[in-house]
Image 1 (cartoon, rainbow, N blue to C red):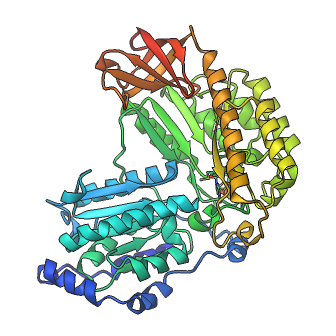
Image 2 (image 1 turned 180 degrees about the vertical axis):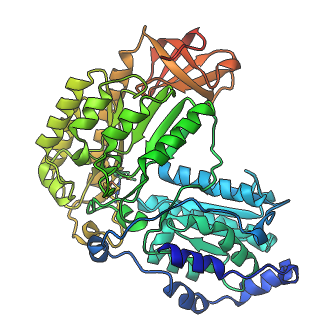
Length: 525
Ligand code: SAM
Ligand code: SF4
């Protein structure tokens, strides 16, 4: 969608006439009358189902950058006296999108709530990466049905990656007609208009763009904390791993301009944030689409490390684009944290090929060798999928040996989940589920053991911890992370929250460290 189309869409909205505001009784009637045929005609104009062949052929249209987001005059104060509840599923990208949508709600005058009983709008920001993520959302929609019956004026919305899938939209249309609003990942900035349509329109509002939108720089953000902040550096993914739905739900890779990112990080530093995490589905591809400059993630990190903010992280890396320039910059240390999450997915070259990861086992190991040589104290973690279609015992064993060879300190492990519209989902699979589960169990035992071994090395050492808040299980205990991203629990005065303090590690558990604070408020160079 280009600027002209975006403006046209915005202008389609009529002025609000208070007389149009429907009563709860009207809403009830509207619900009873809805049939899915009513909606089909609507979403066919804006919706195209995921299609890998089309997605692969997509052309890089010029990405346009805008700074013109504003709440239209007729919607100012639209949310005054009302409350919204946002539920977020999935990755950091979704977390950050929710911060943006919360910012828009706040600008409209809404107040945030965690209590669904008092919410006027409930928005589910969904994840499509695995089937169980989707099942959770459908379960939640089921629960919300009763609430909608009690409060017909409540607006229930579904957004995020699941909304980009045709099968999901169809299922909502068929089985969850109490949903008022569905929109996707490319039109978050349209939230004010969509809310208004959902509130005053006669039909379920479905607006999903199959083409990625422009980059709008000045969207408001209600950040979750005052210590750590997410900063998007790019959107979308062009890697087309054969199991993955992301290139279809998030669109083509689009990088933000370096100046805009640097300005955002500077602003966060000035506001007192202690840590930023640069975000993208594949951050190492940052800058490849910027046609007027030769500029990559290494160059960006080299500039950001000069900003006076104590900690800088980035996620997620793809091994294929992890270049020497980035390694050279990360080796400079300072505020660039010695922690690299480098998803490998499998230790078998044959499986990697079927996954379309575009690197071999040996190439991955070579990259790890280079990283370790340049940054010997870096902690490496990874993502692994077990039970990819037709994965043999031998191929799984290669994953186990690779894990040990690299010496990963932790991993997110998943059983392969077929995703409709992806090439892998079309493959016949001869690996029974109980075999996949056994493999996952074995892998997890290795992951747990390696995590504990890695943490044991910290016993007796003094580490710098960025204190995030009280521990979930005990408000007397504070919790925070080391530069290597290890979670540390320790007793300290609440004044330490938001500070970087020195903590002596007394005990290593499987996933966390216990410690004692030795010095408050470390001077950060
Ligand atoms: N862009 C990152 C990368 O290339 O590794 C990861 C993005 S994805 C949100 C996070 C992880 O989910 C992936 O690394 C992969 O391990 C896992 N994943 C993605 N699709 C999956 C599927 N169909 N089944 C199981 N796990 C999947
Ligand atoms: Fe999905 Fe990551 Fe592969 Fe992109 S690089 S297709 S997000 S797993």
